[in-house]
Amino acid sequence: MWLLTVFLPLMRVYLCGIKVLIYQLLNRSFTLPVLPKLSGRIAIVTGGARGMGLETARHLAGLGMHVVIAGNDETEGLAAVEKIHEEAKEGKAEFMFLDLASLKSVRQFVHRFKVRGLPLHTLVNNAGIMLVPEMETEDGFEFHFGLNYLGHFLLTNLLLDTLVRSGTRQRCARVVTMASATHYGGTLDLDNLHSRRSKVALVMFTKRLQDRMAARGLHVTANNVDPGMVDTALYDFLCGAAKMAKRPFTGLFFRVRALRRRLIAAIVFSDSSIINHLVWRTPSQGARVQSDVLKSLTPAEGASTAIYAAAAAELEGVGGRYLYNGEDRPSAGCTYDVDLQEALWRTSCALTGLQEA
Image 1 (cartoon, one colour):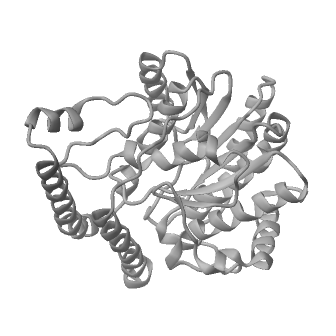
Image 2: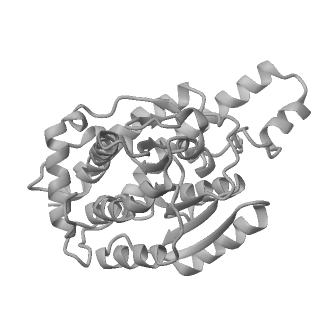
């Protein structure tokens, strides 16, 4: 049983992860372009109190947005808001409670947001879990699938009317949904929806949402973002043995990656003060935040493509993309199956009690 429920899923994650790590070793990470000011616009970022979600929220607030951090830890959320207010000169942030593992909580969150009469220009579906011990949500769904996918499916659909009203021909509203390279190792069986299916489902949902919006001539775009392999709390639920197995490979990778960076810097620059300036100085808007060369890909680096998808002028009116390292990439072959996309949509509506539009 352990072999089927823990070891094999872990190995699938490892295989996808190895491919991503090799790519990151051989290629430069994405550099954010200069982004336009977004003063007066409103964004919701799920899981925005930590990791890549926090970095996304910080950057959007820095561009002048009013960012609603949606999460299930009030203490953590309020601390994130305080940090953003210390840094952002024009934007603002606030925390609103949301438990994506509870469909009731999702509905309550949407109600609390809508009664305020605010527009919504950007929804970043960032929150997610991986390799959590086997359990179910309060609604009886496998926990990964319930939180990663169904919670975001319901949230997006319940906020869709607000997004539609907020989008214009000149400036579309945007839905940015975090995906993962692990979706390449998954398939979609509508009769067996569980953890490995959640990321595949998110990609298919995004493509179907984009097609539905475009077919109706609505000014809302939907894109997926793959952050790559990032050092976040996503691995907190790994069992002890798995964590021990994870450390040697990733540790070796990041040491090689650090050595590569140092060699490039040594070849290009002879003045160590210039190197220190490049590595440690906080960049102006438009530059990528550099991490310590001895560390892994940081949440700030991992969030860069999500920030790009949420704010870049060149992506105005562009949807249905799977963005990795700032570039459009093909997703898994099964995600392009329109009939399967539509079947997933109908099944998701039934599971969440949502009336089909």
